[in-house]
Length: 122
Image 1 (tube, one colour):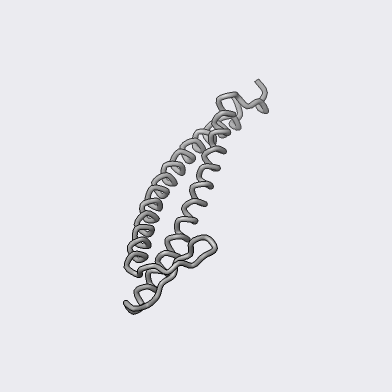
Image 2: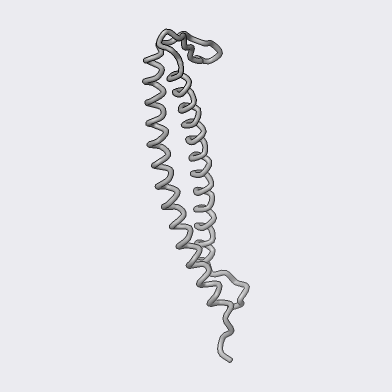
């Protein structure tokens, strides 16, 4: 067997590693989107807190702005914030699992590559 040949099981590990890297990238993008949404909600809640109770609040509904009750929108924003926090926690756990799996696969690949690079009998 030539040292240039890659056994099928090693090819499978390389493909798996690449898929894990892609999954990790997708998770990181989702996590970033959730963080942006959470920051926007946090900013909106801070602005609502600064407002007096008699302030008028509008909510975007497509291409319209609709007048809404301040308490209702605060409750809605708080729910969105809680959901974003939950999604963020789930994505963090997914990220950790994928990173661990990728590290395991990478270690297997490295181990095989090192073993194949060692000279056979001198």
